[in-house]
Image (cartoon, rainbow over all chains, first blue to last red; front, side):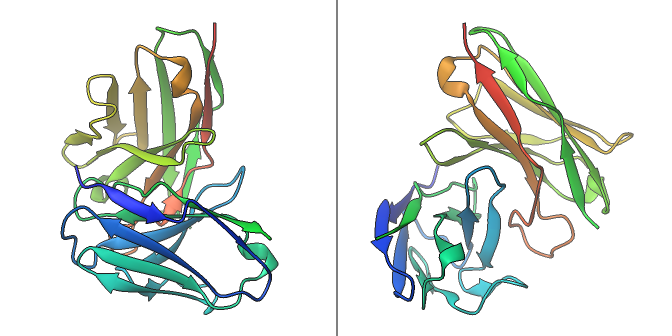
Length: 106
Length: 120
């Protein structure tokens, strides 16, 4: 199975901060990478598909880039609603998720 | 509107099995994979497996291989996940998820989740 290494595991930030989360695949996955937001008690929400395509309705402060094995998710100006956990997922083969990044209030 | 409706919470003893369901509406069930995802407390998201309702082909994550069976009934537009030989560490919320008609293979639509508690 493909392994997904996501970092950091926890990120402390303030409203208005720019935050970046990275994800590295153990093998080449082209652009078959998604990013999800997970809040307690709610189903995960798809934010980004095909490594950099913003899903409809997702605020433009979210952006993502990368291809091959290295990917990033950036929130340009953190808002109160963005404090949550974020997961990358490869969907080139087994749909493996990264370990997650919890974005918490500093 | 795409909707995925899951069965209710379950409490099971170690060694038992659990079977949860996911009934869909708003798209052609047989045309798109249905996935199952485990969300365990403090342990992130784990892909469990998938079913192709069109032909019944299933694939599983190594972590669950041998203990899980996913299936689908196209006559009722319902997917199932059965997990056997339950352990306390299987305590989690299990979600069904699908791309439906999004045009991609991502998990665009999710059920509301089913809490499975494994405790003696």
